[in-house]
Image (tube, rainbow, N blue to C red; front, top):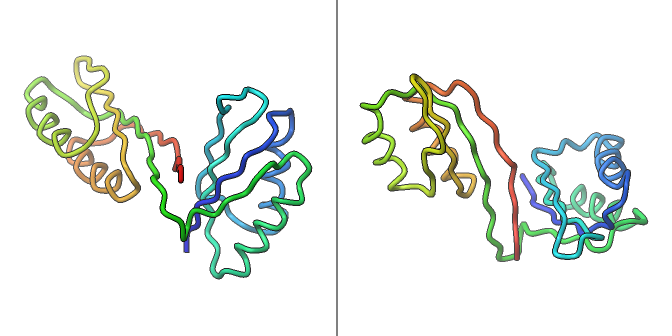
Length: 156
């Protein structure tokens, strides 16, 4: 099962490396990782999505994270009410006759055409994991040339 964990850390050199090293040393795979400064530039916020087969593994991860000196707080969102989103940028095949089709797709999603040239368009969209999955299925009909995703961001 996938678990979403938020970690508040001191914004110092090497903290990300230590957190990632904790996961790799124990053989846990990070499915997604997003890191940014908070309103306080001395603190960073990490959203980590990890596959953990049972609660014992998740508990072990949480305990190990709390032992790291630069970690301020650790929170598991899995059983808490929260909002999560991902950002996707996709480069797709595009012609001007495709604009109405794309606009129809984006009327169902939070997204837009950011840039278009002769035969390609770059689109952006924001949504939860399921919404992004459905959107990508729709965009695949145009032919996705390139795709980047932020990974999950979450807030309680």
